[in-house]
Picture 1 (cartoon, rainbow, N blue to C red):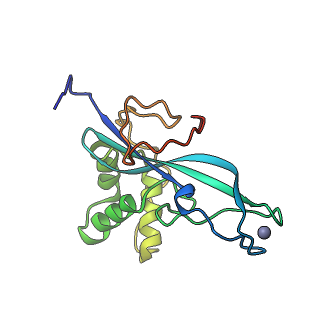
Picture 2 (cartoon, rainbow, N blue to C red):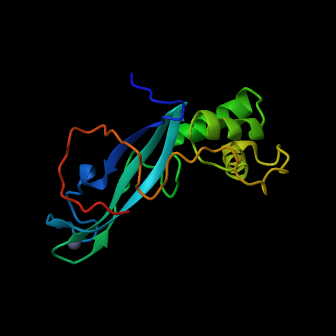
Length: 178
Ligand SMILES: [Zn+2]
């Protein structure tokens, strides 16, 4: 283990792509000639640990049917629709608040400082409410900004300090842009 100083944070990036679930048929006409149309890269936060920052780099693809020209997307089974956080983070927060009785403020602070997840108290409160306890919690945190102590070792524009990927060098020749 090579720790040069206390601030060293290892960034683990896992890459997910709709390409791994390539559609076989056009949902409109059933045609089998499907090609990539456009794509977009999303960065999704995952639950890290002290000094381990985990992020998902997800390639969202729009496919196009060569026959009827319909464009369409797929639902990636591992990527939460429309969210910037992986389910493990939300499960963790919900368990701590609703099962362990920890405060939303405390859990938000731990997520930021110990798990390197950038999240606000208001967002965590939304998760708790969505988990089925709506109305049971006081909502006096929702206007608070994220804790100031978030270290900022990472950035979401793709300029990570270092990265490891789970998949073994899948070469796609994609341009590296956000
Ligand atoms: Zn079609």
